[in-house]
Image (cartoon, rainbow, N blue to C red; front, top):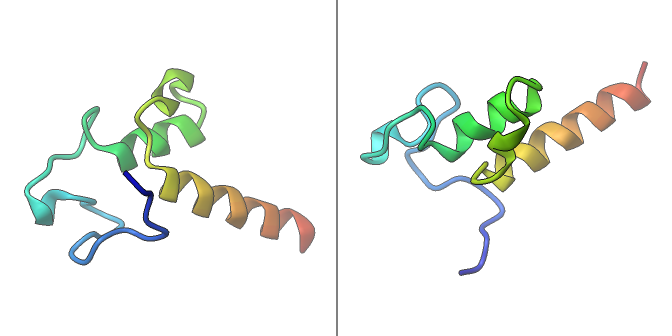
Length: 67
């Protein structure tokens, strides 16, 4: 399955896939990405949303370059 470069229509930063019939928590790839990126759970990388990880990683690199 090809990966999409952005989240689907209906997704938002607060409730992720809940608008689309999903649930936030361990089963939510965006929530998994968040706890991984905050160094709360390194194992959360497995199943984490690659879109959230890439966006946050790129955002951090931008901040580091501009300080």
